[in-house]
Length: 505
Ligand code: NAI
Image 1: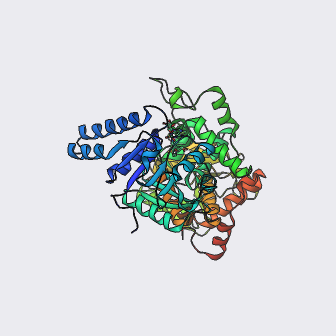
Image 2: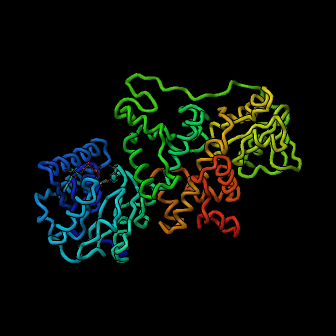
Image 3: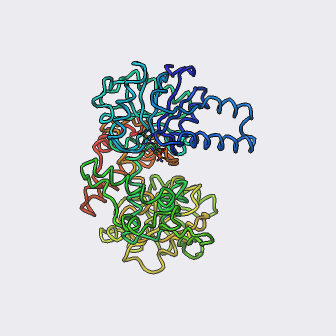
């Protein structure tokens, strides 16, 4: 362990939302903290905000009054940069502008000891660029907390071109000692989380633009089948479309307009309208007091099938067979290519091709595709899409099967890859690219996505479980169908399919 000892003074520059939170984390871990802000009264305000938060915890019985007093006593306001001379670690959390950050780091070098570590909480700027021109760029690294810093577990430790290994190790161990989950990332646009999460929003926006389903239905499918804590549209409304669009745009521009990160016109329109989400009372949803949220689309109740025939292996949906048996359905098994045969419908898990294309390719005309679920036993909803050629009763027959298993059923348009499968494939592809280009290790990428944005499973582990061949097939089909390079599969994914080695490492 090379964590900074608690006797080391931690300075935080910038006492806004992030700086105050970081100061609280360091003080709770036992460090004396110096909080500095260039704006008159801002550091005092930041400190007062921390104390108010601690008081609320005392009132709820979550924090002993003596502990609150001890934490408060450890946080002092530093009136000027000179007062930070004794700090062993400085965390900068000021305005997100490169020139301003560089000025602050240059001024700091003249103040702190030669072995003090200088860290930036930047979420989008290059650590290499922040450190460039300093006398000791090797002691600069990113220490990227998530909002709110005292609550969110993840910290990305970001290495610039010049960052010393010992500095990164110290920051990793210190973040761990502060009770955080620490991952190591190289200084690349979006680091891990803000990059790998892009498809979560982007695919939802594309599905909406294509008319796959409405916002409430897509959100419900992602929550209740995908197992995500929030749907993409409600999450974008919470984050704010100005912020979410700006991050997407900055990652897109930073990767020299790679179509993978192309922003959405739909979201740009929301920003233009000032419909920024919860904070303005309107985004994809109406957040006015008393507004009734729209209900997701669900097919009406249908009779359970009298008999079910499982043709071959259902791959990642194989657990459905046990659920059907447990629900008392008569299930027969025959060899085949992975379909569920009912009276009036043939069901298959999406493999990226539309149902319409599969029927045109020779599959039964009553084909209805169903979407991936995180766990079919726990899923409360499943999305279905019938082929254009399917007779009217096919989707009803298919719905009856899933309803017999206790699921709500949402019909979506016959879009390639449906909703959860398409999103998971794109998240896994982005995670593969990040691993391939050594942004972070596969384990750290999965950890970052589970602790930084609460994904129910790391994208690489999820791809391993669904089957890398299936994920690759979905991506290849999306790329071919749309003729869009945003769907081009990662070379790492291709290699893992060839070698059979897991993506998650
Ligand atoms: P904020 O606007 O709430 O606070 C910034 C504070 O820095 C203000 O109090 C301002 O007076 C002060 N400041 C500005 N220039 C200064 C200077 N030259 N010297 C000293 N103080 C100065 O901003 P927020 O949201 O706390 O963000 C701060 C940093 O953290 C940014 O780099 C941002 O990208 C990053 N970040 C923000 C997250 C968020 O969700 N808000 C999440 C993770 C990182």
